[in-house]
Image (cartoon, rainbow, N blue to C red):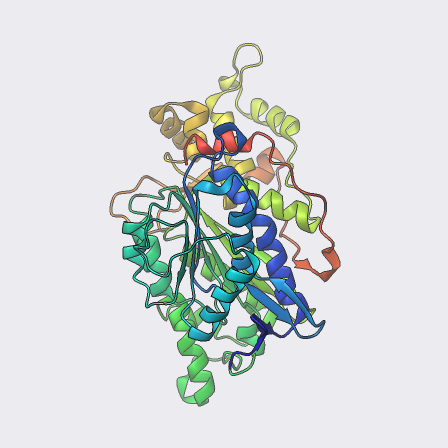
Length: 439
C-alpha cells in the first residue's frame, strides 16, 4: 500500500531512491541539451521526456526524514527553470489516483508558472499530467514528441507488451533513431525477494514450486514476454551469477528494438544491485551516456591504445598502406566500432559510419573486409522486428586481443554510496552539433 508524507511518496531505503534520483537528475539536462541541438542550434529541436510511472514528483526518505525530487520532479524542474527549454515537452503518466493527486499538488506548489493539461488533446501545452488509461498510440500520433526519452520506473517491473507497444509505434524502421528508453529493473530482488515478491525457484519443475514462487515466475514471464528465460535462470547457482544472467538476457531482449543497450548498475546496499538499462540506436549518444556514467561514478574511461593497435594493424595488412598520414577505410571503420559501439555491434546503417565514410557502398565493403579478416562476425539473430535488415556484425574481442592487443571495456562498477558526492559537472563540449546532424 502506498503511503505519503505531505505530497511525497514514502519510500524505504535511503540510498536506492537517492542514487536513482541523483543519476536521472543529472542525466535529463545532459540528454536534453544534446538532443535539442544545444547552444549551436539554440535548443530549437523538439524534444520530449515521457515518464510511464511518474509517481508524485517528490520522494520522502523515511530513514533520514528528507524529501527529494523524484525523476519526474527533475523533468519538471528542467522544463520550468531552464529558459531555453521552450521546445521541451514533459509527459508524466501515473495510473494511481492518489499519486496523481499529489503530483498535481507538487506542480502547483513548486512551479506555479507551469501550465499543464490533463488530456492528450489539451490545447497544445508542453506539460501533460495524465491519469487516464493512456492510449500510447494516441499520444504518439497527436503530440509532436520530436527526439524522445521514455523512462520506465515501475515499483517492480515493466511488462514486455508495454515496452513493445511504445517501441513499435516509435521505431517504425530498422533501428530508427530519435527514441531512447531508460528502463529500471530491481535486478537482485528477483533472487533475494522483496515485500510480496519471493525469490525465483532454482529448478524447472513446476510441481516443486510453491504458490508464491509460481507468482514470481509468472511476473518474470511478463517481464520478458515469453517463457524461454526459464531454462537459463531457474538453476541452482548463486544470486550473483543469476543476476548477471538476468542482465544478459534482458539486454538481449531489448536488442529487438535497440542496437545498443547499456546496463548501468547501482548498488544501494551491499546486498542489493539494481540496473538502469539505457537503450538507443545512435552510437555517439550511447558513448556520451557511458562517459557521463563513468565520470559520475569514477569508473575508468575506455581508452584503448590507438597508436599501438594501428602499428600492429599496418604490420598485419601491408597491402592497405596509404600515402602519407592517411588511414585506410578498414581501419577507420574498425576504430569507430571499437571506441563508440556498445558491445562492438555494427551494420551499414550506423550513423557514425555514414558520417565518417559518406558512402554506403564503402561502409558495406569495409565491414565485409573486416569480417573476412576475422575482426567482426555476423550476428543476424539480434532482432526480428523487421523482415528486411542488413547484416549485423559484432567485434570478435578474442581476435582483437590476439591481433591488435586490444581488450574489451572493463565491466562498470556500480554507482553506490561510496561514489557520492559526484564529480564536477560534465562538459559536453561540441557533442550537440555532431549528434544533431542525424537525430
